Length: 74
Image 1 (cartoon, rainbow, N blue to C red):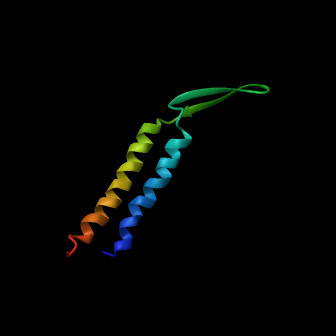
Image 2: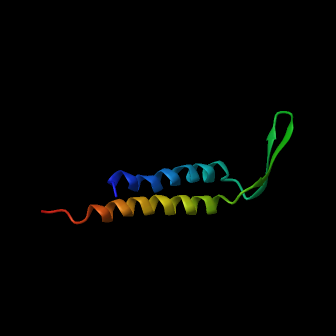
Image 3: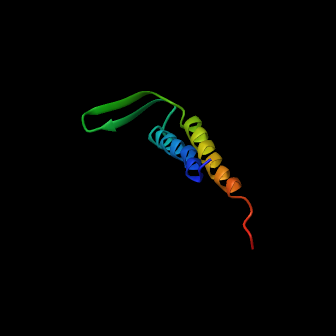
């Protein structure tokens, strides 16, 4: 397997962390006061689940690269 292929899980994990960040105030309904009243976002997903899966992909990609490289000669 090419060493660059180990970056694929990292590439998958980054957007999942972005989704977790965007929904950081969830889960559920979150309301904010705006200049003309109240604005609510309904049904935000749980950001912890998105973050956990994203981190799992990133850790898997990094560890795969480390173990694929093997021990270095001194």
